[in-house]
Amino acid sequence: MSVRRVVGFIWMFLFMLHTPAMSAEPLLVLYMERPPYYYTSKEGKPSGFLLEQAMAVFAKAGVPFRTRSLPAKRIVQMLKEEQLNAASVGWFMTEERRQWGVFSSLLYHDQPLVALHRKGVLNGKDGEIDLSDLLKDRNVTLGVIDGFSYGESVDESIKEYSPRRFVLVGDQVQLAKMLGAGRIDYILAAPEEVHYLLSQAGLREDEFGFTLLRDVPGGNSRYILFSKAVDASTIRKVNDVLNEYCPR
Image (cartoon, rainbow, N blue to C red; front, side):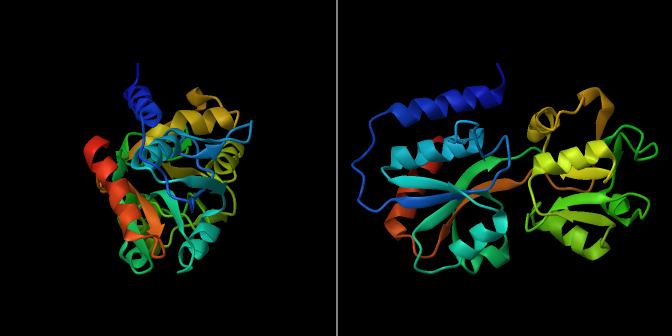
């Protein structure tokens, strides 16, 4: 049994435990469509191992909530509204976001990003490469999601080297389909999501490879990001649960 499945069972067990009495106003929990972390199932239910983990945290903390799926840019706009009692799951911590939001304690730590590509596309660079060298290569095109962050360090590298890229207003599965069709040459992804992306895009895994990125720091830390309108006591309750149960 995988570590992720074990962690999922633990969080679902916590979700079923007795939780404190909940207050009246529910917290609006916003999430983007980025499977397997968070997505809407075919039955219309909020799903994904990280979203389910966060919902278990809210339940254990006694925080009532409702969920809504939105694009990343729209989520940011809503969290910046100082009167909105809202939060979003799985965000990387950046200085810019700290100006208008409040981060929880650690929710999850990713494995390091890799470059996912069709086999043979990176001209012998299938094993490992510096991301900086890959971004400077004008013979290949990077596919990215509009408004999405890959972590502060990687975002800065993309800004600095300004690679050839295609910006998609959509989700990672759509981006994977473009990769399979040859419209882009590589995308950046966490190893946790590679199998799901290729499967959902209807692509054969044996036709793809991934390249380790030597100069990319260890996997990104993910947090719950609250708007500044959220009561401090609510955030404290959530952090108490995270500090007790979330693996460091």
